[in-house]
Image (cartoon, rainbow, N blue to C red; front, side, top):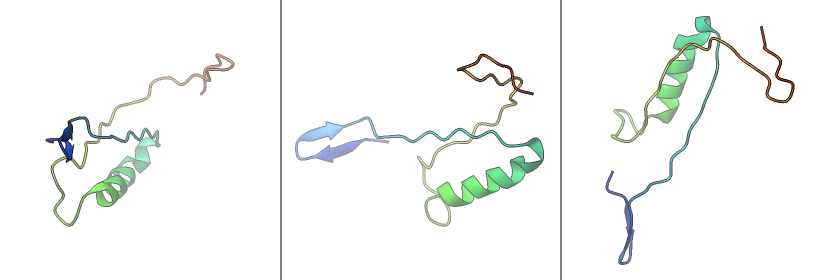
Length: 70
């Protein structure tokens, strides 16, 4: 990614989006396929379309109460 040039000014920090989802393990494949289909530029995709990172969620806490969720 080379950035964006407007007149004589080059902006080399492109805006990014971050989406964080927690889905049940049995719905992971559907979630991945859905995101890939929706986020891909065109039919074959383009460098810079993004990445998906999959990791387990071992524990969840509610910040306001400090309670651990099941």
